[in-house]
Image (cartoon, rainbow over all chains, first blue to last red; front, side, top):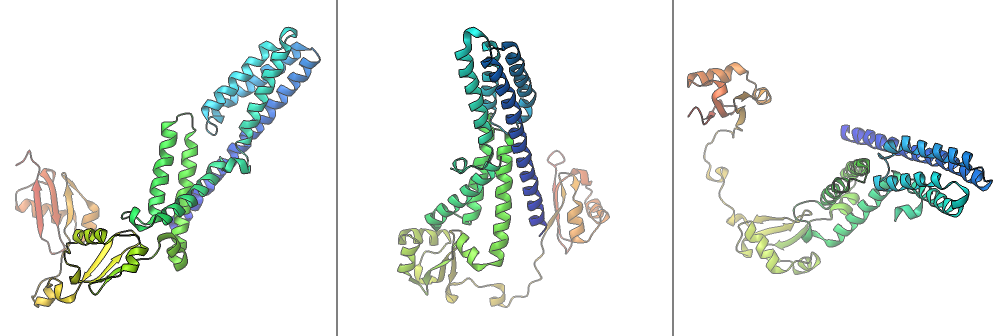
Length: 126
Length: 225
């Protein structure tokens, strides 16, 4: 009986950590995507300064959370997303708009994949 | 993270079904569920070790999940014969009164040569001397010889013998083992007195065993010899 209680406590701890991990990754995804969306909007309106500000904010946010997310997410994936996001800001100008939108879309897709890998989806099971 | 738990549960079920399908011959001395646990834990523990890109929490959460499943399943198996049978199968009587049950042998997919080899492993060289041979759920063979083939015991010979005593290690590498003293119901003084009688100090003893009848065996440290 002691073992059962101990094992259930262990499982409880594991599930709590899992829940916290999922919440953390999801909230990070939402906050960063929000900043990137704002950056895209400003870039569409050719307000490149504001676009760069929002993208830099997203980059800063990602960098600050990357280390903690590494406890829940494959480190290689985190590195790739970090590199993609940091490549977006320098492209926020009139001359490289197509590249900017392309890389922005790539960053958002990678972030969406990151979140999707941590939520209950049939595809994730198999 | 939850995905790791879900996948672990799925993998557990898949591997246990596979092992059960493979049958007794492949699983050696372990129960099927024990083998699954061993395989899964060793594999899962190795993954985050080999691939440092993977968070160690992936491995930890999977192993904890396996441990919980194993404990729950073993409790269920204790309470339910059906669960026990599903997990471990049932033992098979392969020889009865010196006659091989060929049907049963076919069922467990063993050749007669395999059976003979297993019997030899049990020091049995003549099938006619076997009363029962049972293939256990863990894959080992238990053999009961016919009465006339069994070695004579002290009881059979009607010889008077004292009760069997279990010698416990009371000193290991110069250190007195309190747990053994407690089990024997003695204190440190008893041990030191016994050693003093032979002119030995506890710190110079490599191994000392003592049984409840007070019989001591002492091995001195090599530097003292």
